[in-house]
Amino acid sequence: MMEKIPTQSGARDQLLSDLKTVIQDAEAWLRHSGHLTGEEFKAAKVKFERTLVKAKEDIIRLEEAAVEKAKVAAKATDEYVKENPWKAVGLGTAVGVVIGMLIARK
Image 1 (cartoon, rainbow, N blue to C red):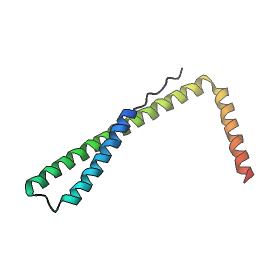
Image 2 (image 1 turned 90 degrees about the vertical axis):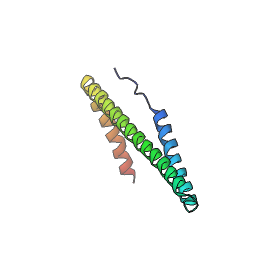
Image 3 (image 1 turned 30 degrees about the vertical axis):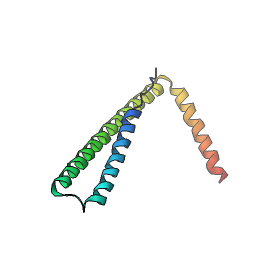
Image 4 (image 1 turned 90 degrees about the horizontal axis):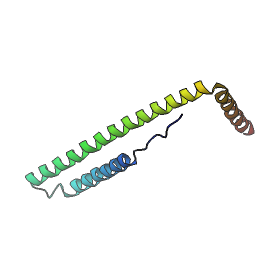
């Protein structure tokens, strides 16, 4: 039977938060770069790079989770079609008829 696929909204929220932080840090860095001393500039650069690396890691994790969810969904679909071939054919036919009717109306 089909299982519910868990969502990772926490990872998505963290990624959005990290991206907002990167943007805010970049804006602050650009605004104040003329006023920063050598050490302050280096510290700001390190902080910005660290936030950017974390955002990249979050994007990679989110991408891997999306790929895994797609694989699970494909496997579940494959199993359903194998267990219920006539239902799958009927559903495909119904979808085709509806799409055909929509195209014919134009």
